[in-house]
Length: 441
Image 1 (cartoon, rainbow, N blue to C red):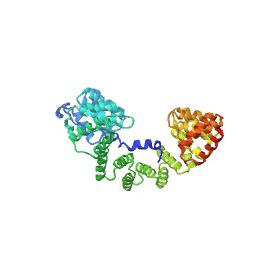
Image 2: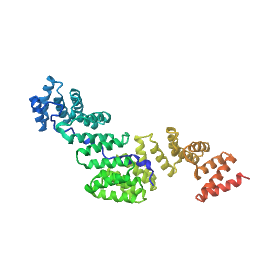
Image 3: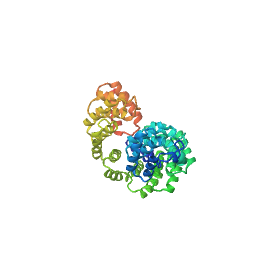
Image 4: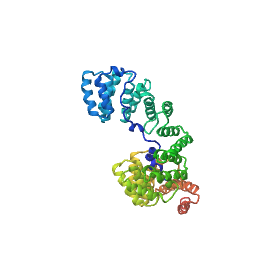
């Protein structure tokens, strides 16, 4: 089994469909809302600008709106139109400012609140975006109709759903999505979101069913395939996950997310295909740290410690204080019997985090190998605060006390070792019995 820490970041990504707000554009071509004057009373300049917007003639629209707003700075409809033009031209700061002015000039402008909320969401300002979108859902959508109102609810659902780094609220997101579905037909993104929310609330069967519904209609959906595979991996249903992933890769050859998941599944089944697959993936994505760590782990599991450590060393160059990388590096050095270097690495780990049990385990072992029994005992004492004793640690306790000529303690730990070894360590068990004959004379 692969050490799970190597894949923590990858699995976090697999668990979450892409945040679709990043692809949301501004609302449809501006039109009068219920809170703005009827088209017949709107200034001809504004109507001319909207005609230019309908043709995506941003320069013409801007040329009309800029002088108009200098003379009429509180014209909410013109402000929204100008914001739309700036948004379309990717002048996001200007667009946000104009949309905000539009909401201030007309607090009941559905389109302005919606557009500002979507823009803020695309910029990752989710709390501010939520305020604007929630306001939009309380206003009449005017000519935009139910489609734009559904869009506001869908955007809220995306913001409310839990994701890494943002707890969210699955119940609120589900309600948002339900409101959207009352106004417009269910889309593939809706089904994927529903699957994610079901997974968040422990409804794995419902989540799997939703992912399968998407795949039945769209076999090339990477999100559905990786989402379903993630569920199966979490349930340790590795053969089923492998089937899903191989089918997905037949549709999406060399997809890095699906390939990484398949590598994980193969490794967890101890299938030799995992290592060459990881090597191929690393060749295609040499700068991806998650893939590099995965390959380093697989190389270590395969006994290729030098090759593995080259990768860990390269990763440590940019993250010298990463405890997980340091522990893996130290373990490789132990396997290569470079105990002095490994001792230095584990010392660094325990200095960085005195609560890291793997660091103390490594330090105890390497201190023993480098003839430092007092440090071994200190490291074992620290380790015991976090992990239970086992046959190996009992033997380290015993030999360290034995080296320090503390006979009573050494004999006690040799007995503990023999009681727990159960014939699994014949050489050390023979040594323990021989030492007990001497110590207990």
